[in-house]
Image (cartoon, rainbow, N blue to C red; front, side, top):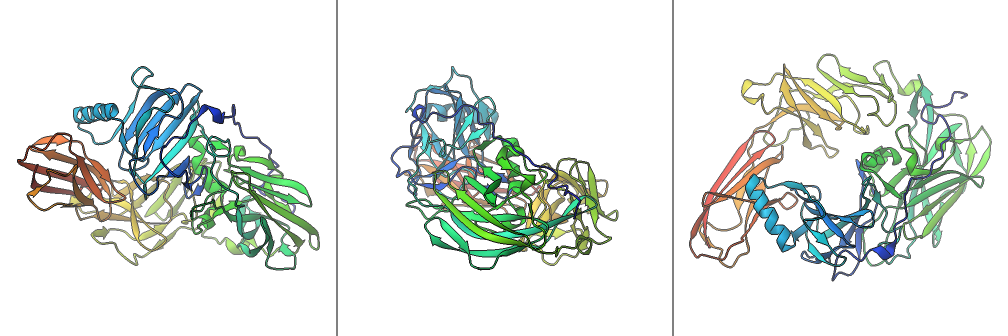
Length: 577
């Protein structure tokens, strides 16, 4: 095999542009009265993005005091049902920005301002920016209280430090701003090997061969097999790893993975920071198909076409391991966490004849898709995906297929067959345009959308609009797609009895949920006056916090909710307060 792979075309060497190092002495701890334990660390690999901060445990409760980590001012506040929920951004005098996510409440003067602004705009969600004169803060000054808002599965504080000019997020643990208790080395769970070749200049990967590992000493691992690992003429390794910290049962991502062949470094990945336009490149740094199925980090010890150089400090021949038949080499892989603990595994490899036959994996129905140019894949004139240049992390072959609907979702009407234009293992850096033709009754045309089959066989909404006999969606979603209509409205159920006395309650709560398409808008009025309300989708609740003393009289409450399918639900009730 003399042809050099497109995926692994040349050696690459780059050092991350870190900018000026953070000075830990500039910062105080962002939350008071907690045990300083953690549930997630910076840069953890998740399908679709790197984790942009650290998650600080708040001892299982909400309402822990949050303070400014350094002098500066409140530059941005956002309130949303998803994402960071209630979040506050501090632009600091030292050139960085601190971000606090999933808050319960902001401090009183900010809460009062936001309430007035929400009422003025009649909007439940806000994203506001401010200059340095409105809310200056001093180090240690109270800015709010921790909570469980947004896309949060439990009370905690999501905390970030960013470079203010670029908004590049920084690894606050590795740079010493946050210092967890951690003397536990990372765990190496498995090693995988993949042979690779090209066909028509497009990489073709063989099936992964997996090898178990055992720990022989603290931080030292060996393969469970004694004989050398057999490798083809050209391939790469994948390290499946995880990390632990003292005092918690959570798993964490690793900071660095490095590899040597015969004592010569040929690969090193580091998670020092990234700008948000690169966050989705997590799917190129990881081995995405394996990452989607694993609870560990699955890091490809090779550089794909779409993996930016900034994540790699050492890269020889893009991570390819070459071995002629009968050749023997020694591989050493070292893994390090952000607290400086290290683990390693070392093993022998032996070259064999190639077991990979690209022609047998690519048939005449396959369509070549090249990452450096616009391309498309289609099932006749029924379904097509148009992929812009640069959207694919790697050139590949696609085999579009038409499938029948094998299962349906409650309240969802399927109006087309199922189409697989790109496999679920295909990740896109930027959106593609998917068009699926379908006969949609006139009464449903405004609300027809695409849906995708999940890995467990269920269906989830993708979105899109109906026009000229087809549904069109701009999306990064790949896999099995179909045209659907959601026929059921959201459900609204009060978490109080009709006419209940809520004089001693601090809030009024309702259960708000949707069967499929997802809630896109809601409103609440009390005695005919619009009031701001908080939606917590992870808990399925809608909450209004009382702001006036009890008047011991009957009030009328009305709630309206709309889902992405255009279905509307209404509730009317009363309570005493």
